[in-house]
Length: 294
Image 1 (cartoon, one colour):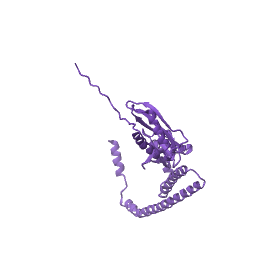
Image 2: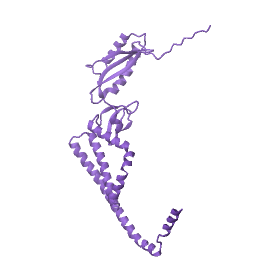
Image 3: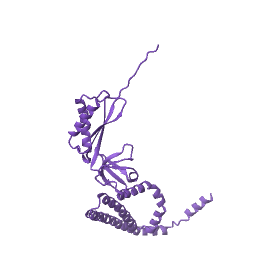
Image 4: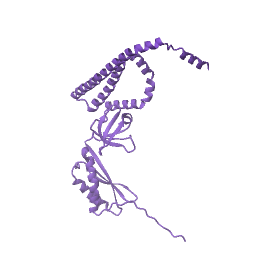
C-alpha cells in the first residue's frame, strides 16, 4: 500500500508547468529534424553498404574461381562472408541512427548465452558445414546417397552446400534441404567417387522352374544389353529359398551415370525374358487345410 502511494506521489511530482511544455514543444521540431536527418543518412549508408557487400562478394567469388577452388568452398565462404558483412553493416546503421555501440555490444554480450541456447541447432549446422568443407565427403554436382537422415535415405545430386544446409536434387526433381549438423554426423555413401556401380536386381522364380535354365537366359540377357560392363563379373545367384519362390539375384556393373536407366531397363526385360522362357514369377501363396470335426 505504501509503495503504491509513493508511486502516485512520484507521478504527481512530474513538472507539467506551462513553461516546461512550451520548452518541449519548442525543441520538438529540432529533435524531429535531427532524427530525420540521421534516419536519411542511415538509409543512404544501408543502400551503399548493400551494394558494397555485393561487390565484395563478387570480387571474392572471381578470385576463388581463378584459384580453382572447389565450388562448394566458394559458395560456403561467400555465404559466411555475407552474414559477417551484413552484421557489420547493421552495427554501422544503428550507430548512424544515434545508438551507442558500446551499449549495444554490452546488451548483445549479456544475451549471448540465451542466443547460444536458442541457436544451438543453427550453430551445430554451421559447424557441420565447416566439417563438410574440410573433410570433403562430397562435392557439388556429385551423386550421393545420404543415409541416416531418415529411415529411407535420400538419393540425389548435390546442388548447393550452404553455411547451414545442403541441398540435393533427386531423380524425380525434388529439392531436399538437409541440415549440415546431422549430415556431418551421419554416414554418407558417395556413388560418384567410384566410376562403376553395381546393379543388384532380386527376382523370384517358381520352385517348379529350372534354375539352370533361368540362370542361362538371364546371363544371356546381360551379355546382350548395352552399357553393361562386360569385363566385370555378371552373376545370377540363388540368394535364398523363400516361402513361395526361389529368390535369385541378377548382378552386373555399369558406369555410375548409367545406373538408374540401366536398372529400370533390366528390371523390365528380366520379366519379359523369363516369360519368353516359360519361367513363372510366383506370388505369395498360402495353403489352407480344413479338417472335418467328427
